[in-house]
Image (cartoon, rainbow, N blue to C red; front, side, top):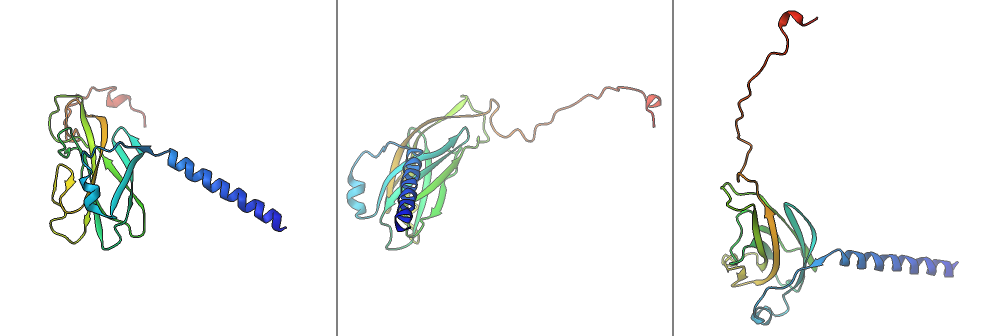
Length: 192
């Protein structure tokens, strides 16, 4: 009986290990775009370790960010999708959240929405995703230059993607279409 119970435990452990490795394989790693190692020296034990894509579609992308440390106080996370000059794209809202306590990863989802403007190209290009973790109660913690935090810990990852925009650009929900009605039959031919 004990031997059978041990076999069940070993099988359950093997299934759990294979499930964890399958989940890790479904996360496409993003390549780091940080140019200097200065950030890692200044951050001490608080580090952003890696980021990977867990899901994406034609109008969204979700990433998982792994980190270590950040236990001394409350922290906030800001994620930004940026263009080739490291300026936030207006088609994506910045994602802001509180860093979960006692965790080692968090997920950020960015949704693409065409801006209210006429586009000259059929797509918008994203080049980077910036992730910034900073103290929650510091009024200067939101200040960053090109996705790099002045007072917090930041990481930048390459995200070379094209996001399709409508040909007319902007929102088409207020378009007026005139429809001319043509009679099908006369009122005398309708049966009651």
